[in-house]
Length: 413
Image 1: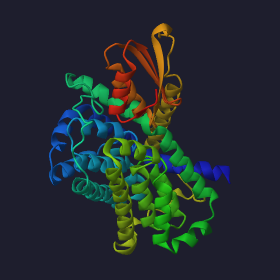
Image 2: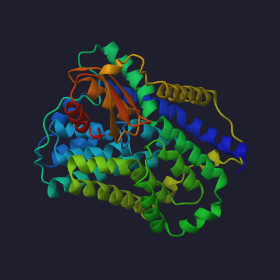
Image 3: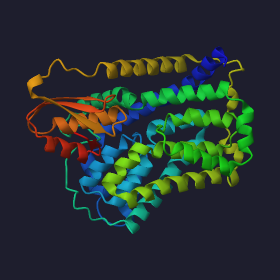
Image 4: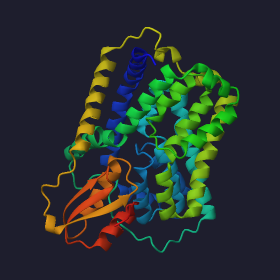
């Protein structure tokens, strides 16, 4: 692999995406600080199609990944949202988001950016409606809770909410999706310069087969909506059809093995099967629609702009945005490595608990928040890498287990 070509390809993609990613992070922070979960849960309660539609429309702009959306969805369900609305929210939210829609436009063009939320809406309506039809709504384990998973305290002033929005968008959001964004960018650059075109050209002769292969690969793995974009671009540049790339964009972020296990525990086996099948069905339907029905020229990105063999020039604005994004990613990495502070704990009152299902900084913050809110907890730290919570205080193990389980994670003790 030519190292210089690798870095040129990587820098080209980063410079193209960075202004839109930063804009998306900012809008994500505003949504986080100004949209109350209580309002969302109120609109998602009740029977019929109306809560399902509302859940889809609320979920599409929210910038949550497939693991980050789970605590939010579980909280909404326990606050009164129906199973159908919860499933609709779970399908729509991780597939899109203001950050990923903006980044999709930057790399893949306007038709892709428009088609993503349309496909997310269709899939969420299908999954939510099927859940209402085939799943029993009654769940004796569900009880109203008040865990705030998505927004800051309602008593904050406008200025405080704005500061909270900036902190969430440029610190918490970067921590949640940063690692997966970097992985996606590196994979895209490697595919661009290291994988022979002939490898994909053979598969491109059979688009539907390629889509099925993409579904098998994409569903179990974890990849965020923004991180999937450069990978889809590199696959299209190598000769796969736009429809195949679109299947990756929709199926990859919507589910992964860990999220499916947590969903099964909270909504049941039947709702989980409907959820996964809705994701697969809509991804394949819109992939086929793009390749066989809609004009092909709409979905062909400007591959020359990312070719490592051509001359590339970077504008000052794009370079500045790329530098800012790099600094934010480095800060997030350093923060994650130094986040655990055990010096302030009283060892005689400290217990450690294993927790499964945490996959990002958003999950980590959620677990820390619900445990810290318990009576008797004086201090808590959550080690994401080790999958454990260190809790100081006299809160009972049962209370901690209930709080963690209600947030959508698995308490192992």
